[in-house]
Amino acid sequence: IEAIKAFKPDLVMLDWMMPGMDGPTLYRKMLETPEVRDLPVVFITAKASQKELDELRALGAAGTISKPFSPRDLPGQLRAIWHSLA
Image 1 (tube, rainbow, N blue to C red):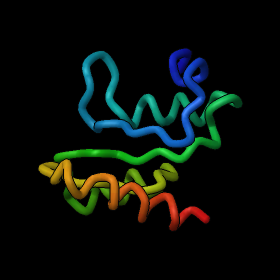
Image 2 (tube, one colour):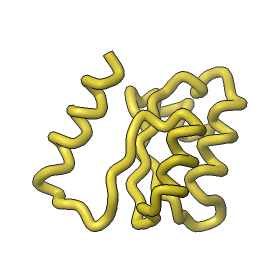
Image 3 (tube, rainbow, N blue to C red):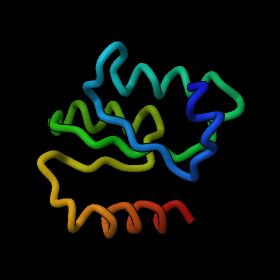
């Protein structure tokens, strides 16, 4: 969270499975932190069951991108999510 505060991104991308703390747990901590709670978060995840996707949406994730994904298509997917926020 301190790195996110220092970097001040427009959007945060998290993986569901990360070392030390999973993405949903980090996102919950972000939601408790005034400086970063309003940042849109996109999850990139191999956990693409409907239950997991519903959990991320319920948390307020701006979007999800399932693995494997095409690095060539990623910018367009992120732009689509970004424009859906407007």
